[in-house]
Image 1 (tube, helix red, strand yellow):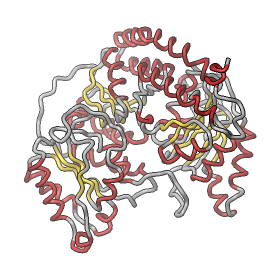
Image 2 (spheres, helix red, strand yellow; image 1 turned 90 degrees about the horizontal axis):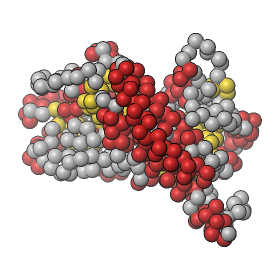
Image 3 (cartoon, helix red, strand yellow; image 1 turned 120 degrees about the vertical axis):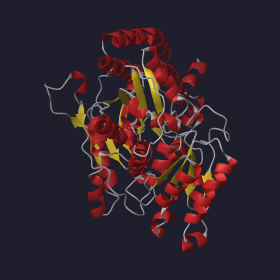
Image 4 (cartoon, one colour; image 1 turned 180 degrees about the vertical axis):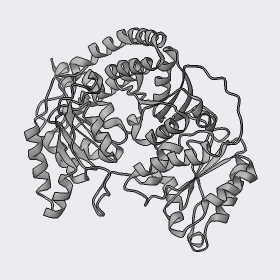
Length: 505
């Protein structure tokens, strides 16, 4: 479904100028390159209909944040440990350095998994080498060696260890690679050193890249053991789905119903074995393009495994993705894909009939990371909602090119937005809903504007798949039409919430 609406581009340009007016000239000029309004894309008659862009989102991205500015980005350690490696459930991930990084990133992503925590799965546990001053002075390699020995004694059913380096490790020059090689021989298991010190790169995006490279160098390239694998023509990897709130499980249902076999789902609810056998698949399906495209490109080059991006947010994109995936496998799978779409259509119709009238015309602003600033747009539009603005924390230029396939003319686009800019944009536009992260949640709610935490689904989910769409619609309705907003005495909200109006009638 593609709603026929346009945003007020002139109004959004005016807002950008007003926000930048508060800055010194030099800083305003620098930030102007990161703020834009979507303009109509040049017509490309040669491109297939599904690949034609609606708009162009011309902003600069992947540039270092300015010191002293309140950015919402994370660091390379967050990208590696928090996103890519952390959800691999049967490995132990050591936060190698001072205790704080591991403590404050402990189990915050809601990566669901099956297993017995502390016995054969370890996702929600925190392991740290707890660096102290003497470790900084004399080095921490011996301590790391001892930590891995202790882990092997206390948790013998682990299938491997990753060493997630924090800032001090790179600054003092510890040789974690040498320790990893030694311990692989000592314990006979995979040990992966990840050079993801937080000072590397401009955001968590480089942490994703470093983590992908570690998979390439320390899992694929160093894989020595042979394992039995009976392949089929329909083997796929689901890559870049982190199973937040059960998303990967909801996606898996649809792929299996259309006749595909999932060889590995990583890294949400993943095992090391799933990553090791990934090169045996016939196709890589990538959900979070930004964090996992590197390893997919490597597998295409090394093992000749093609890859494609898919989107399971909202029925329009689910159906388009199922059909696109099915094309790769031929008529038999295409027929099954159509059967799956038809099977869930009554559910879609019921959800839209229930929530559509309550949400139609509501305006949304998004500011998240990864794929969400573009992928969730059509899920909102399937419910009749409109996107007023969207932006990424750590996007690259190709992310904004892909965003042009989703956003309408006049949409406000913002990259690495500062806390001040986002607050002013929201304050001026007054959307009916904001979808962003935990740091933005409470200031927005204090403005009297409904909010959904779109990094980890505000403790709800899944949002992927047809079942997830029903939960998504319910959650957006609960946020926007909650009676509490009718009790929020603010000058810009003079009418009571819809539910209070109904009660009064």
